[in-house]
Structure formats: structure tokens, C-alpha cells
Amino acid sequence: MTTVFAAVFAGQLAGTIEQDPLVNFQNQNEFSTWNAVNDGVMGGRSVGKIKSTTDGAMQFFGTLSLENNGGFASIRSGRLQVEMDPQEAFRVRVKGDGRTYIFNLYPKTRRMAFSYRASLPTVAGEWTEVTVPLEDFTPTSFGRRVQNKGPLSPDQISGIGFMLSDKKAGPFELEIQWVRIEPASVEDSP
Image (tube, rainbow, N blue to C red):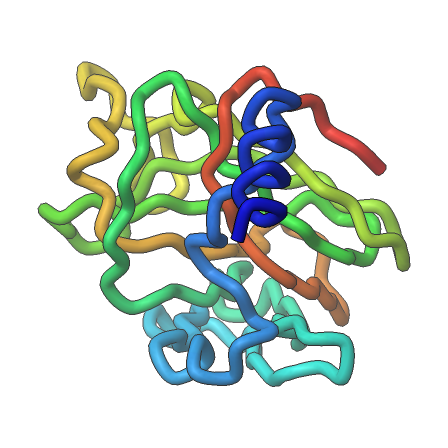
């Protein structure tokens, strides 16, 4: 017991204690609350799906199509209990295909096609950890920035999601292992 306390105390002093992930796909139960929402809701033909991987991640994959005014594929969590301060950030462990995805936050007052979004760059075939401060998320509706809408208060976040809408038709693949909340000062690491 003394050893555990000393290790925890030493870790706190060194700043190495990590919070439990907000979402951790190494836990198979996480998958049941996620679903895909693609441009088919507007007549498009993009296909986005999810599945678990052997290395404990959720794979978001499919084909982006620009036919019938389409062009997006997305996945969304169910309701989440998000506890964070405005100066904190999301840290996401991802392996992508080199494309830039969108990281969405959904407010409790959900309106159709409304979210706060931030860019989520990926490196083809490599695991990276990307830090996105809460202040980097901008309000959008149908992919367009909403003017005169303030920043999202952390206590109003009810869910998260990932989207691809880069106007490049073809296959895509993004793996997400976990999402954490951390101090915004943590730097990205490859």
C-alpha cells in the first residue's frame, strides 16, 4: 500500500498521472454507443462504417463519394458525461491515412447538422496523439461556420464524433484508440 501511494504521489509531482480516457476502444463495450451517419441522409452515396481492430481501436472506414451532392461520412458517440475545464484539451490517439478528419463536439441542445468542430490531421499508417484545445472548436451547421455563436461551455458537451468531408472521393480509414481530457499545454507527439 505504501509503495502504491508513493508511486501515485511521485507521479503527481512529476505530472505523469493520466486521467482515465473519456472513450477507450480497448473496452469492447464502448462500441455499442457509436453509430455512423453518412451523407445518405441527404441523398449522397458515401459509406462509413465502424469495427473493432485487433490492437484495441475502433476503425472508421469506408468510401467517400461526391455523387448526388454527397461528400461526408461520420461516426458519433452516444451521450457522454464530459467533465473538463475550459482551458483543458482533448487528446486523441489515432492512426490515419494521411487525410485530415474533423473532430466534432455535440452540445446538449442538439440541432440538426450542428456541431463544434476542429481539424484532426493524421499521418498515413502511423499512430499519433493529437491535442485539440477546447478553444479550437468552432461552431458549424451543415459544414459552415456559424457567426455570433460563442464558444462551447464544457458542461454543455453531450457527445463527440469524427467526420471526413475533404471533398476527395475514394476509400478512407481512421483508427481511434482513445480520447482523453488533458491540460491544453500538452504538446502533440508523433
